[in-house]
Length: 509
Image 1: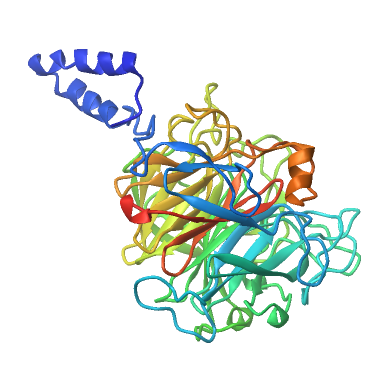
Image 2: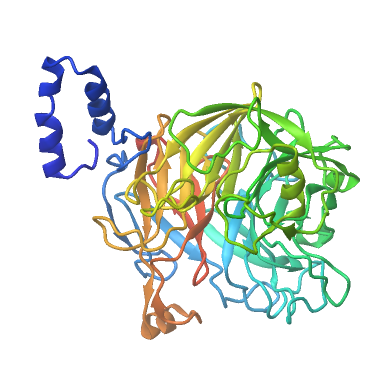
């Protein structure tokens, strides 16, 4: 049953009299409200979770109640900020995008659970700006940028037989490694979410994508220049065509891109051989505005070339809609816009599943003052065969979803969203959430951030993070084990990675 308060439910029941009056338009609105959808095509509330109500569950690693989960679910934490990596150096913080890597030497069983001794390898981003660099096999920039040294990069984690086993640095010398995506050939693409024309003391620019090998020592640290220089968020690859789809997180001036590689052999390093960067344009509509979406909206896409993927950011022309004076457009976006490309609000998470792309626009919608790009977010689906884009889910209220960001799809086809909207108070109290989506685009609560840490709890757990209330900090990097039995996810701050297990078959995930 939908999570609608009793007074509103009585109002809905009473409005059934409209049927007798033959008011079909009102009836349609009534039916929409009964399914948690407003008349303006947005979800207003979640449905009851098929997994049940949430309650505090203790971490099997520390004994602390860090997450709210449904009954029957468990988790263990690993590689907190400050924990020691395999080489003895402290684990960097700001955990963000992450993915499970394809095995390099051992095939994945076609169905059922993984063998007990199966080792799952994950690569995890660290969305850090400047500070102490991550010392990794793949180093990009060792100079000074913006008054400090680039402190972003990735770490590689290993999980086997229900236990975390190893953690090591893999990429360093990068900045603001936010999201990214796995490749069909078993590597990770880590994205720098920064738009800058600045050059470091070693002559390096930032705002690129980097390929990370699951064997950390094989990571090169080479930027993939053809994929553009802009505020990258996430990546998803069509395994049939080899096209690389990319999102841009730049409020109200966010394009949607694809890269057509020259080398389509699909192997580590193949994307370094160049290709064509393109941006999406709605057929028949120049500069289509998708910053305010409605459920069911559908558009057919075509693609325009970006002649210079490495072009500097430029000042926005006077009158550019819905942004503040003095803001800049990334070089790729400026070229795309001049060719009539579409724009979204903040195009963030993206994931490929079964010939479709699931795309998150984190802030689509308007706020109470009518300001665009200040809403609660949406999920679009792009059918790669037809190039038709459709709005599956649009949140019209923070209860339905509050600024979803990263997205993943389970092996069974269920969608999980990581919220980045802050405390998001609901009947469980404050705390960011993991949101599940049904195939009909209905949202439900899967988990809630419950991280409140005192100095004594931190000391007893053997950790070194500052004490504090971290419930408002975002979830990030949700991804599934190959058998769909374990959901891995990060709490960005204080920086914790979780492995969640439970009765997934009980629901839609």
